[in-house]
Image 1 (cartoon, rainbow, N blue to C red):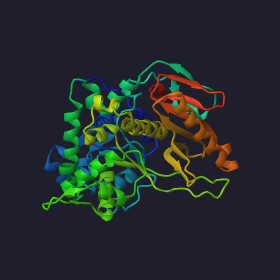
Image 2: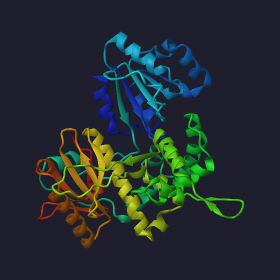
Image 3: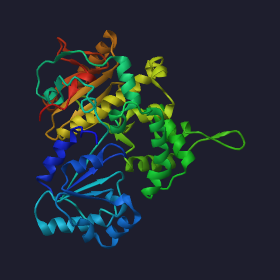
Image 4: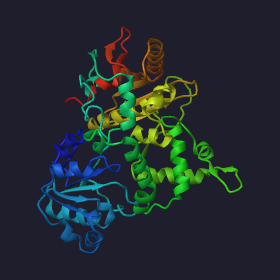
Length: 424
């Protein structure tokens, strides 16, 4: 058996088990949820190992819940009544660290309508960051960007390396076994999402329409796009030879279905208080759980992306957002984007629970691009209210370069391959 590769979420899981009766590790299939859960569990049961076990969990949940604590219940959503059984058992035992539930789909709201407040802690496990996969030098801790001070580092990945990492993704199976074909693995992954994962979560979709929507999403990854436009781009061939679009209503339904199985995730718009009356845009950006899924849906390999750096720029932004989300989760933060009617855009805003925030522009590199990004960041800082300005911790240009430094204007230029979770 391969040695366990530490995950950033391990710290969150251990901390949650010390406080809550049950921890839910959720996320897309193949991100390592079961392995992470087993790493902390004293006993376990996998409900997807046989239909009989899922049926037993539905009819006699107390049998499934028996075992040394923490008890891992893998793919718990296959037996939704487990939710209430765990909730009652947590109340009865009245001590933390009793159960770890893992799942690749979010059950409908009626399954979890009885509150888990104070009993459950949800932790999302995403594909590996460059820090987790060992491809970041780790010289700049993410938390340090909220503590002030300058940054300095050199070395690490270059643009061709970032292209390879975006195509391969942060999937543990591909990270741990470099000889496997990422294209074959991820093509099968997307097909399984449509034919297995969505029906398994009682999400009924038309496979042909869903595949068309996935391709349209891939063409528009890391951008704001309305459902009507996505539907128009997700064209379907008709017997007459004409192309038909997908309705906006169907697009919204399918996006919700993909989000329920954690394959896509929206990046909501940030809404700070501004000094001026400029209107904010509220359209979210959409990202796949990993940019490799977008690359696969586009049929894009390393060579084609190196020849088309414009397309790779969007995938690189998605790669940055993936890693920022993991690092922000550890600090209890969320990742947004900013855009207003004046045309000012900032790729990512990380806001912590205490109101502190940091802004990030993503560029592949180049002095002119970095200068443009720094200008946008300074403009945003000048637009927010005085209160929000006081809570600003850093302005950072994230690049696909291999040099990190702080400019004279205070804007930091940080290579993605230098970032790590750091110590918290």
